[in-house]
Amino acid sequence: MPDDSPYNPPSEIAPTVRPRRLRRWFLGGFAIVFAAMLILMNQYFYAGDALVQCKLWQFYLMEIRRAFTSSGALGPTTGSGGHAFVLFLQHVAIAGVGGLISLGIGAFVTRPRA
Image (cartoon, rainbow, N blue to C red; front, side, top):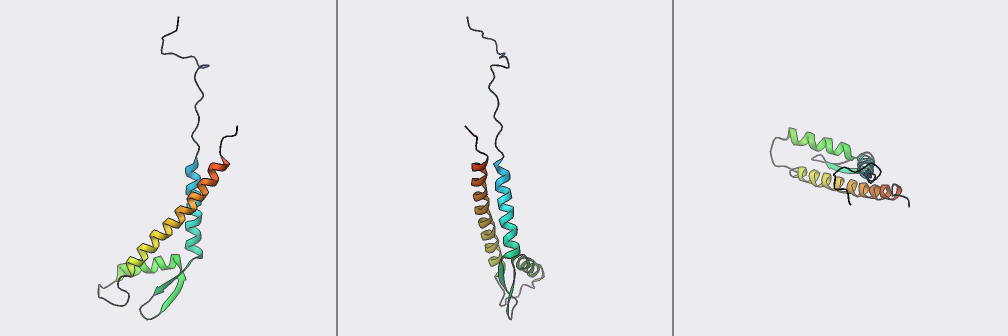
């Protein structure tokens, strides 16, 4: 006669499988690529009369400063905020690809062994 009680002895309970921590792999790869691009990638900043070559983090700082100190008058640098926003989206997308590559490596490294 089968036992209909809701209690199962510990020997009959299947061991719980701990979920793999692949989120850390993605965030690690994302952070590495994001920081490397900030430090190593060159970008051109138009200062009104000349192009200035600078690192990406300097470009972001100059664009933020320009956005907050702009008088609103139309000039040769009008619309550069949109360029900075598109560049930031591309920066995040490329870092996301780096995170996905790292995620694939992490899934391969931490796969269960048979």
